[in-house]
Length: 435
Image (cartoon, rainbow, N blue to C red; front, side, top):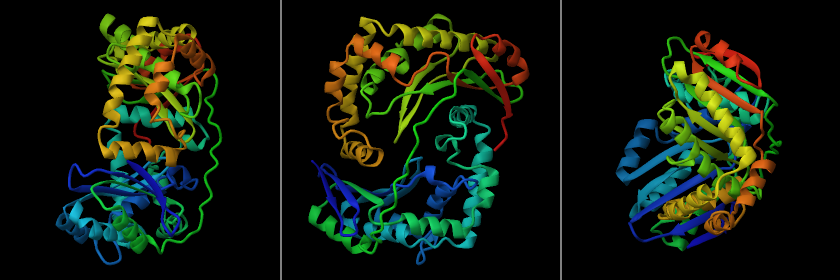
């Protein structure tokens, strides 16, 4: 059963108890994500997360790893646009020393100059290596192309230039400002005693300052009008990667659940309309899918294919035609029934472990989802009818004739063909290795 409490430092604690296995998962999540990277110093939050993993004032990185092994524990740090999650899993009888270690990592990072130089080298090397992954390239450019001059469009991993501007002083200042009691959310699942846990959190995190960090006021995102194509120019591409996106919806909007149902029919299943038309009937791409991204604000709806270079223009034209017919005409009664059945039955796999149930509660706390979003998801899906789907497609963020399109390909082989697609308002080209 999920419980919510607050520590004496003002941190929210969300727990999900289960004695099925003698293990405990515990995380401390900062409400401050990569959207708070200073302008020109993109990548700072991610660099700080990596620096925390390099050791504390008492334990260097190597000794930290040895300590985790001794405790039978795992520790990971991940940065998203909205939050930074620091946590792991430990055998239940070592919960107390693991909480103490977690507190040291979060509250007392060493951030030695030698460690920061190593972190910077690693992050730059990862950026360079990402240029070899065409799919990653495609989606990295998709956000910046969809949200030009907006917070959501900035690269969370930074750039080679921005990483070079970040100083130790920047990291220390950000850490001091954002590691506060009210800005930390603890999530705990597994086999633990609630009273012992409360005592441990107050003992080891009670010194967190009670300062409230002002919440980021995120403007409503917008996607420019027209069909705007960005070609990420990479030499000698026999296969391409294509992403097409427009605005989707937020879980707090009435159109969201109907859009989830509609998207499942359009591109969320192997038997969906998009995959059937692109892959099965025409063989233009080995796979074709679409998805709705969720975050603190309305985010992107996107579809993805990876056709050969010779089929890329035809595949893109078909995707756009299918999108228009979907938004204008909705889905069929058969598609509705199949999608609802899949969503209702597969939801069991979203709540079959305490860690998954806890993640849902953290969505509500950290991303502002409606309190009953997950617990009433199946009931809401059951209520969706064809009229709800049509209304969601018409009134949601999806826009006819306004899509951002990113293609990883060899530009000289495709540019002329892409220019013939109806509604294209611009075609830009960037080199693939611009990081």
